Length: 398
Image 1: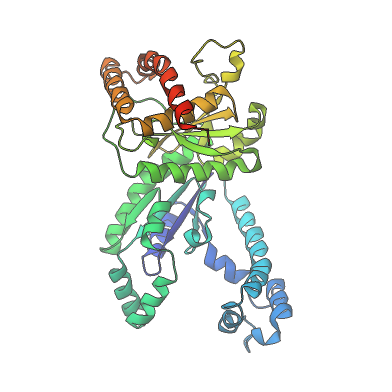
Image 2: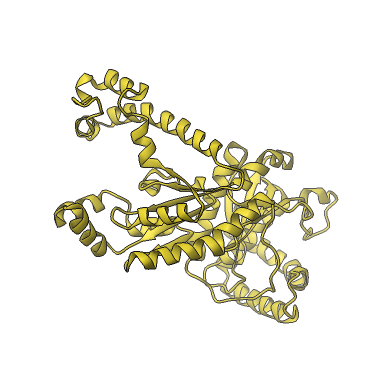
């Protein structure tokens, strides 16, 4: 099963996207619909709300008077927390029931208008955002819902900003044009990304291979690293001791392969057994044959350099996840080299020359071993310089 999140600001056209995904075969979980269902007329949820806030919150039709409840909790954080304490567990249980009912090959789309506001995007293997300019959204709200322009803008202001939603997005679905144009974008997303992504997760198949190609730095690499790191941290839960964006795409301005390297720290590699399924749920698949780093110096206990390695299953973005013991040499080394290259522009330029030569010498070989092997001597020689920098600056790993 592949679980993805779908969101967008009011008036963006999210409902058009979700309807099309259902037509293509997705299973939809509508967060707003569930929130209404669990407090509908005659439900235990509504009875608990009436007990907490008074019988007047139930209207003459037996349904919850949403305006009255809103007036009670709007300016009272304690009452809002009380309301959430009633509704959130009910919503969680109903959502879990719907997830359990979906088949093992399902692409499950969680439609939530307030996903970014609630900070729940890290739960999903992919987040798609219907992205529409504010003026277009205002016009649609005025024309289709009868709002005044002032009311439309006021509602938009209460939601996350466009920048916040874009930062949360693995996929942007622009929707400033016609519904047909949005549907065409959804169709491409389904065929080119979601269907193969679901199959990769179900078959436990990471996306691998591809000739090493060094590309110009992308300003979006840092945000992508943060987004993916949050997803891994969510999956790791209390087992995790921190997730860091490492590797070349974590060094601003450095050309690199378009691959996001992440490092998850744990207390023991044995703990990773319990993370295999949670990590698969967010699109990270273990590659068991890669279990050890190459020690950068003679070490009487080479097992200290061991790691467990996962690759992303999303065909739309390449991800390498290195899981190492917190405080182990390999864990420290990955952070040290990243921070040294960030600080030392000359070393960064020198490393770029090595990367470009390695990519050229690999001759388009899809097996990255030649590319990586060509760079190793440089790292071996550079380690004392990185350590000297750490000593002179008082650097400590995060």
